[in-house]
Image 1 (cartoon, rainbow, N blue to C red):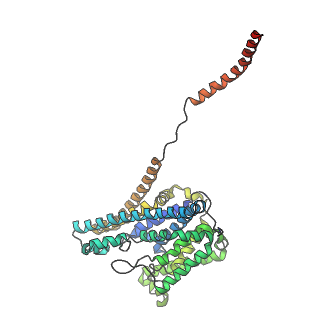
Image 2 (image 1 turned 60 degrees about the vertical axis):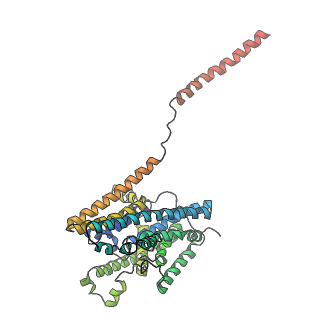
Image 3 (image 1 turned 120 degrees about the vertical axis):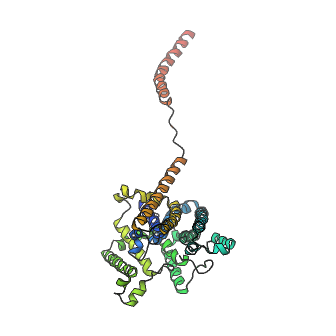
Length: 411
């Protein structure tokens, strides 16, 4: 099959690191209930939130990282590298899972607070620990706030054939993803969870954002440039963002929501996150178009010092995400045990973000230390070469004279 996808230009796209850092910070803040600081995150001002951004960027990054490898070294090599990444994600999830439930259990026992076990959905460990742990390893049992990483693992696990087809028929692959999305919503498809229920992030619907990210990276953004830059598109995007803001605020404040007709209010509240409502997808697409239009890859602002912590957290995304999920539990517990005042909310939020930045900077520094230092050039090499160059003309000049002298003597 002919390759029809367009690979992104070489060089690191700092926009991806920046927005991945934004997603990690927002996920940490959003996982702390009763926290005034999480009002700065996007979930309060529109239909989509940090989870949508995280999944989209994951698909975008996976496509251009492994597409070139798949083209240059074949499908098998590209697929095995993808599965290696899946294994790394799974190991990270298992480590986080064990530490997370151990911390919850310790806190519940230490402070005699059994309610926290129910709040974080780990009550099954008390009644049936072996089966619950087994289901956790199978990604079916997920404590509270541990839903995003299993979704990422599943999407990456099924990505090799999707990427192969995306490279050859990108638009057809995008249409197939749309068809699966609407079929899952219509028929109610989802994966079963343990002990009851289903996945909070339905992989059958959330795959749309992941595939959309891959399509966007492999020529979708370039092919849609005329639409993105159209004045009509700009007016529509602005109008839709304002509408999403109004409907989200209506859901946040009941008195404001009562001003709207019931049919309009109920269409957008509560926000359908599990099945990824179409208005939520459209909201994210609008945001993506606005970023492409107004934040080019060469934007000088990406080099501003104020963005460096976010970019660094985005570059070490997996570790920062895992630490952030754990810290959100610690922050929640601290607020429960303290007064939960405004000052306490700001303190745990700022401290948590500072720890995330420290983790990101440390891992970046540590990776640099693993690289071998460049070998210094031998100090004596240059003087020796100069001496040889100086001696060379003398030798060439005296050699013929010596030869002639010998010849004359023999004659």
